Image (cartoon, rainbow, N blue to C red; front, side, top):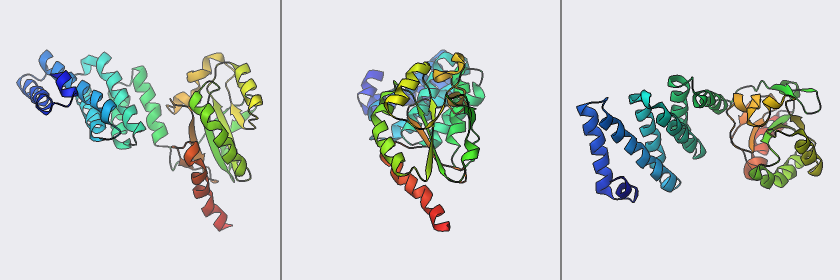
Length: 274
């Protein structure tokens, strides 16, 4: 029935929902109830992947079913935790932030001892950054500490990047064009996620990056083990945040395409005050 349901057969979809309801009412802790609930998670997951961009309801339903399954059957941790993380990320990427936060919130409380639970805690911290002052202090690749709070007076663009991250490499020319245009009003701070310092130095030289670069001297704190990336649950590159001249996070959902418009939007009110 699951295969028919995934193909869009309405009767099969209704049958799976009815089975889940019946088994749960009959014995909520039974294996049958667990399997029926998992089947609905798999159905909604499949449809969210296939149709989520055009039918957002499937993303919302995937989030709901993943949370129901994890809450009712916490002993099924190896299944429920990855499903919750997948649902949260899918919803966040689609802009359904409330649903995403529900999934990450459940992960960070009910499953906080798992790696995914700890990662979810960081993701929630990042999702709640907007409107907050960013307290970021970390070592630079030149050996000097980078303290973002000391940069007030200009906008600050934080860019998480790696030399081998193709989406970043593809967006870089436009990022450089825009930041050069606003250099008078905006400081750029890179947070590098490479493991090899020589790769970073070569990339910086080849692409003429004049940004301050966060880079940890300890090899155990490089790559995705970067304390900054881990603390804020950063898992895609590039990730860009924009701070206003008061050091307040104005935007955390940026790419090369909307960067210039957001820079203009954030800085214009400060220009008018002068």
